[in-house]
Amino acid sequence: MRTCLSLIAAAALCVAAGCGPRKSEAGKKRASNPPKPSRVPPGKTSKAAPEEMPHYRKVIHDLVHERIPGSPVKKDGLEAAAGWKAAGWEDAATYKRLREKKTGLVMFFLGTEGGEKGKCAAVLTRNLCLAPKGSIKATIFNYDSKPAKVAFALWFSNGWVYYESKPRTLEPGRWQQVEVDLAAGEFKTASTKWKYTARLWKREDTRQIALLLYHQGRPARLLVDGITVDQAPRPKPARKKGPPPPRARRSGPPPKNRPVSKGE
Image (cartoon, rainbow, N blue to C red; front, top):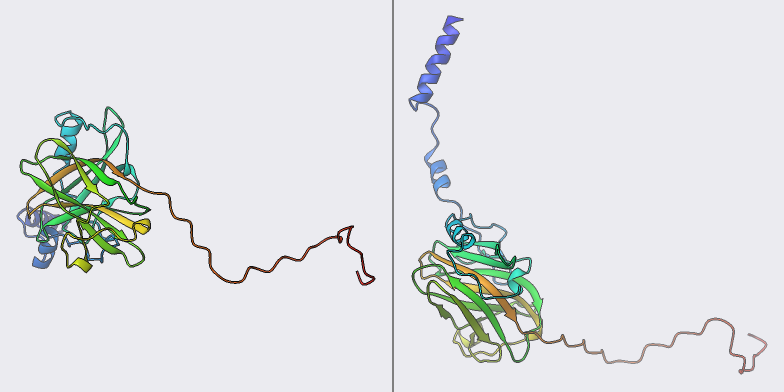
């Protein structure tokens, strides 16, 4: 019995002194460097969501305690739609859906610690029919002390063809409205060799929309509210050309005015 107790005491002293089993160097590396989200093509979102970053908590705290001025937006827009998420093919980012305490209106937080790609995004997969004339608007608060740049991206048709608007600059510490003209020839896409000279294509078959945050490799934090997209009624599907469908045969007794043959 004494021998057993002595062995237990020795084991306890060894653990206290750090003599227990050590983690391998590979294990330490995995713990300190969480895996990056898997790269996926445009038009889809990554299943591997990036690890949540703690810096959004300060923004939420300041919003709740009114250290951030209230949003000027008076009603919910597309930012309140279900399905927004951080894009998995850009730098790791945190997306958080928030509800303002006083008004009960929805906004969302988009933030990043930076990264080598220089941008992150919040993306919503949804079928839209953009109007020939109109705009995309968003009211955004830049929480940081340096200017930030944002742009909108859109995907069209079955091929998920990508278009992106010119970036707009957000000054720090205040709410600003960003507006993109849907009719302008100021979008970039692959067919223009990524020059901002394209007009939107297949706007009646819009598949996805994203808000891009260009962070220049630095941490950046935004509150996003009042996203509106001008839309048009969906065009009716075109009727297929061809012979008219055969008329259905009449069932029931024959009409009274028609003479009835013996075979009927």
